[in-house]
Length: 302
Image (cartoon, rainbow, N blue to C red; front, side, top):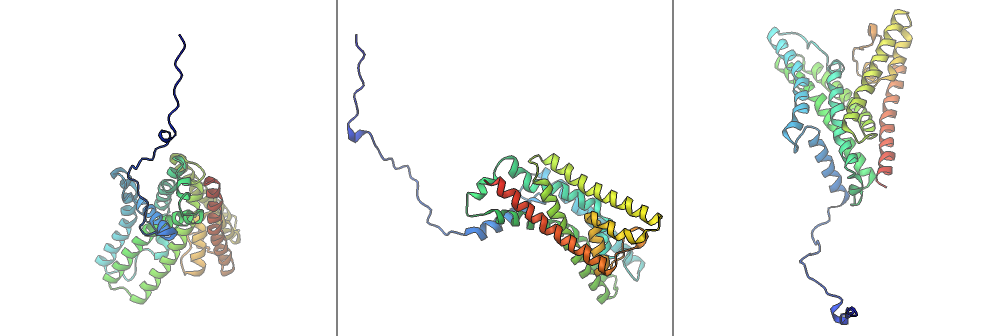
């Protein structure tokens, strides 16, 4: 028995239009600037765990509190003892607390970019009006702002305490301003380095380990070489060796231009000419970090 051949549908039955209720968007188009601000705000909030799980808030908030705690203790001591000056200069505070700053950077730089790389959401950002430069600027500015909040908050505690202790207003204001300039430069430099390292791998754990390794190894090697140079009497080389670690770079800049006391061995800070080199290297690293991030995300967004 022959199989029945399917009959062709009449021309009018082959095509149908279904109205399923979709409507075109006729609201305001906020554009790139709004998208960039939103990404910056979201990234800055995420750097302190805001808008994320309670577990994500523990480490950044704990580091923030621990960062401010020594400043509060110093203020209490200055007020009670009626000291004539604070136990620690504003420009020295971040240098002394560098381990906590490095730990914060290592934990939050990968959080800012690694998840986007791991889950391949970067091309989705670029499918909208946002461009590579917008993404990089928003992420860079957010992490630098988070770092600035971390490092400037204890300086504000010190300044408020100094005024409560009735220390000289002009001297304290000048020192506070110098400290803010120093931590602003530190925040830009550290944020750039942290993001460049974290953007290499989508694995957050690898990013954390890499950031810690780079900051720790460079500082340890530079400090060791500076100590050897001091023992051998090569004090002129100490400042030049300081060019090879981020924290010693900042130390050299603030010693040369902000009147800070150097943490270099023997207190041998750079001269003004050497300080200019430190400043140029610092600004060059910031610019290079931005350029490397741009190149990295142009490739990722393809």
